[in-house]
Length: 213
Ligand SMILES: O=C(O)C(=O)C[C@H](O)[C@H](O)COP(=O)(O)O
Image (tube, rainbow, N blue to C red):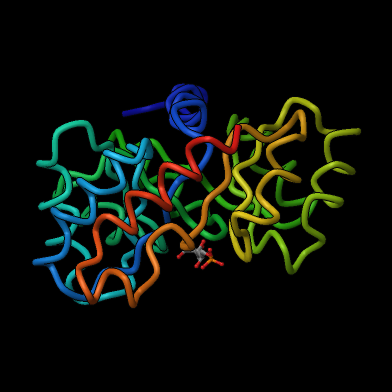
């Protein structure tokens, strides 16, 4: 059992570990270990493996063995997703939104979750339950850094990890906000570089991202 407040303490630490959490969509499990090593070597140890591919759970298993990697599951939508992620070795879960069933399941299995919110009402509902650290998704499409700056007025006690449409170019706008410590994004592991095994290029993208804050 983990409480929402304990989960938030854990996810806040994740957000303070590095300025960017790579959001990974990995099709081929043989790329998992070298990809995780490249990102960790570049300075981004917190990794979100989305449950959007058939290989995702094996990828989590592989990446969890890489020294220094802190591996979580993304696109966690259901209690079953949460249990599968936990069993594969995920240390945390990320979801684009939140349901009571999902939050209940994560709390019951001791899996810290970074739940998603897109509006003040959703953020307030999560806050009322005790989640003070939330994903802001889909960040660029729902108003970007401007929207988050506005939310910091009435809801300064919530820390956000914006994700969705973030790049090396616009990440600094988010990272300069008082209610943001890190952003999530897929730009540090482009599909073509992963497919071609260009690990040095990925390490370089990661090390540039690690210097954003
Ligand atoms: O899979 C999830 O749980 C999501 O919430 C979606 C991801 O956050 C975005 O796919 C990342 O966005 P990009 O950096 O724009 O590619």
